Structure formats: C-alpha cells, structure tokens
Image (cartoon, rainbow, N blue to C red):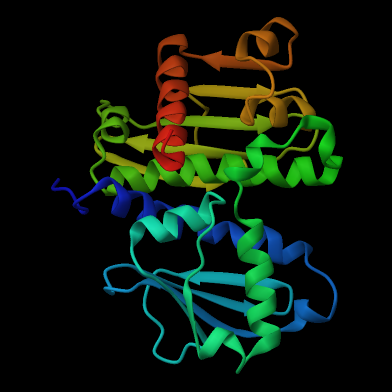
Length: 264
C-alpha cells in the first residue's frame, strides 16, 4: 500500500475532514431553536483543492460526503492544511467564507458555524470534569470514542505505519469500547491489512479486547485524561477483557493518534 498523503499536516487535515467532521451528526441531533431548521450544503476545502468534504444540513440531521459540491450554498476555504488543523483543535483560524462571509445564506451559515465550533472536541479536553453537565459529558464521550476509532481506520487507509501495524494479524479481531450505564460504545474491526470503525456494539464477533467503562463519568475522566489510567483500573472504573498485549498496543496507538492530531 502506498502513502496517500505527502506530509503530516495534510494527513491530519484528511483525518479532521473524514473522522471528525462526520461527528457533526451527533450535534445536529441535539440542536434546537430556529436555526436548527436551516437547510443547505456547506463545502469545506483547502485552497489548492486537494481535500474537500461537503456538509449537508437538514432539519435535525446532518450528513457528510467526502467530495466537492458543485452547488454549495456556502464554501469554507482554508488557505492550507495547517489552517484547517488549527481550526479543528481550537486555535485562532478562520477560513475564507463565500459568498462573502456567508451573508447570502445567513441562517445556514450561523447554524454551520455553531455546529462546527462544537466539533472542537480535542480542544475541549482541557475542560474540568465538573465544568459540564452529565449530558454534555455523555455527548463528548460518544464523540471521542467515535473519533479515535474512525481516525485509526482513516489513518490506516492513508498508510500511516502505526495504524497499519495493528492490522498485521492472521485473522479478524474486534476492539470494543463500551460505557456500561448507557450502552454507548464504538469498535474497531481489523483484518489482515484492513481496518474499519463503527459506533455501538459489533454483534458479529466477540471482542478480542473489550474495554468497559463503569459509567459516563468514568469514561469522560479516562478519555479526557482528567484521571490516570491506573486510578481507573484500581477503582474498578475501567475494566479490560481480552488480550493484555493487544490492549496495551491499542491503548498506545490511541495515544499516538491524540498526539498526532493535536500536534503535541
């Protein structure tokens, strides 16, 4: 498999568009008020045209297609991959918005901006545990679990070696993460040189490694690094079933993904 990208910044931008942007669906489902009824298509792209995705908003729903949109109502054009990356991790960075500042579709532009700012999930990890409500914690847990599994699958498609190393197996294996008190979860399914991700529980095969968080609070603390992993294990807040060797491998891979996306 040959690499699909030429530099780290472009690799990160691809992951943000293809693994983070689709999470807007979770935010759209919760949105209320007059702006939630705005409808239309927003194209996000790099100025050189090398990467683009289209966000389509309808009443209470959102869908992302990883392609250009010939008839977009609003276009967000980032000058380069680094500018797009900065936007998604919460650094000061805004794209060129056309038609001029989205004024031709003000309701759609306002709704899109609100939803896209909500996707700055990596920046939000600095939030203190008690600073957000239980429902907000649950939403962030769902987003982070979906993000890390989608990101690993996308990075594998981009021939990122740490992700490819996980698929050097002789048979199918499933890595599952579950929040016990809500049933929320995500999974990563790997086969020889292939990887795919999904939300919920994978029903076709028993997990090779299954990480279970006792409740939303435990998952939030572990995924935002506001509690140490060992603290969670000692208190029974996090329980891992299956291969200890591969549990360590996938945990380390998750840390690498986090560091790669945040640039730390």
